[in-house]
Image (cartoon, rainbow, N blue to C red):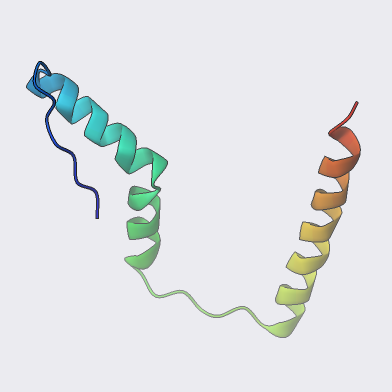
Length: 67
């Protein structure tokens, strides 16, 4: 849950703007949209394929980190 307190000299528009920033950074909108509908679980083959691709991208990112 996000709680924001208004600073002394802060306008209501700025308060709303800051609230929207916290919501976007916290990924609340994305997570709530994902949870709106039931998703089928991945099968074993898909889990393995994702793990392989995740490891591949991780190594690529580490290689390119110091270029």
